[in-house]
Image 1 (tube, helix red, strand yellow):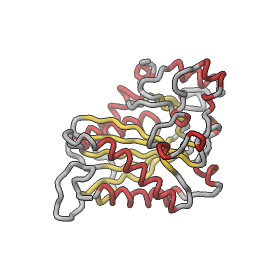
Image 2: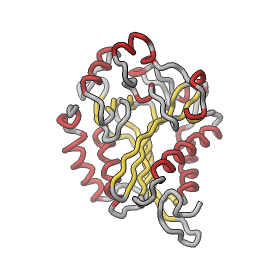
Image 3: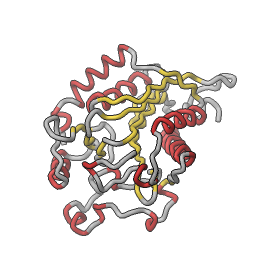
Length: 284
């Protein structure tokens, strides 16, 4: 693939464009969401393509942009979860759509790329490329993960929301993202283990996704890779191998880096005004 491939840039006589790799760190809910948004703005303004791995300081339920707060409260009451800073699970609303995600024992990653708005296939190509790279790296580790579009329904486990009682209470899609299925979701032994969402702004594309590593007691109907594979897996190995695969497919040379001062200031402001603000969380 030429350097232009998914990037929409120009080739540079075989030289790879430099991208920034932000190593795995744990942060609070508002900070994680605000950092992704700050990176989207920064890359659109000319900052390098950025791959960021992260975890969560506390178990966190992230609502999809269009989900209602009342749905979260109903789910929490049913599952004996107390939401908020004084509870056992934090709550944040994402700027991307989809179902709610219980972030706990997982690897979360975001990829922010400059985007040529004339390249209409960039979003789909990027989405599939990231999921394919993860599936290939899992295969090296002995885990077979396949996109949902390649599997028949009888090869995918029923979600808890497929039960008659749940269907009557909530006839639309399941509340939790990992009980929903879309074509590129990765499935292991009948269960979804990877889901992603995208957000686009003029000049850049953000894709962030969650890979379930182990089951969390706060959503124990959702097994992770360790339970499904029956083995102890190395997250550091996956992180390293995945960075190499994305370097190849995106034609980027990753250099370790951090947020610069302006990005940190932007993230702090976004967290204060948006993701850490109750008005944003309760807007629906």
